[in-house]
Image 1 (cartoon, one colour):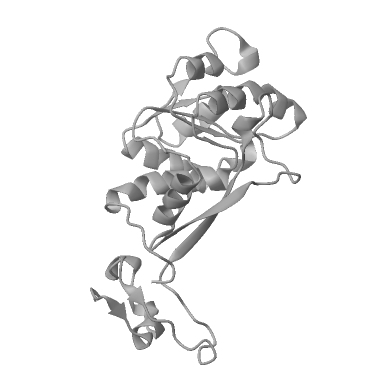
Image 2: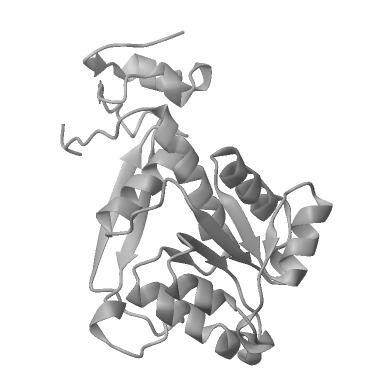
Length: 228
């Protein structure tokens, strides 16, 4: 079933179980059913809210998130799939996800699961090369993802910070655990901030970013009014 129309009726809204997001014209106006008549109203869209944090205004600040953070604003991405909604939210917040290059991946053991593995495989399918620290590289290789090993900050030689400064890395997925790990990765976050390299510090956000980059192939990004 495919619905291509300027207006989708309330009766069609009730039957979302029979549709996938791709069945509906992204620019179609969706009529809202009476909320008092539906015990479990369903909607065929995703809304992703993103905080805007002014890290660049404060030289020397660490960009890792904590409970005391306060954003200076918020943006929202809306679309028929989660990936595209997340992509729009990142665009609204000023984060430009790359279309090519190397992705640095260094994640804590607790995050070495299905979501991060899927994220890495998506990036490889999109043509990106993976650069990883030894522990993460070993895990990725064991699971069929080719990657290049790079030294951590404290290991000496040519480290990931050097690669970042030289413009060899276009995206960073880095999750840490423990005070020492946070301190060791501080320079990575500082260079990423200064050079405007997209940086994600949780497994969930990293996975969402990979889905967003994959979703770009679904077509042009459109904008519409929520009141439309």
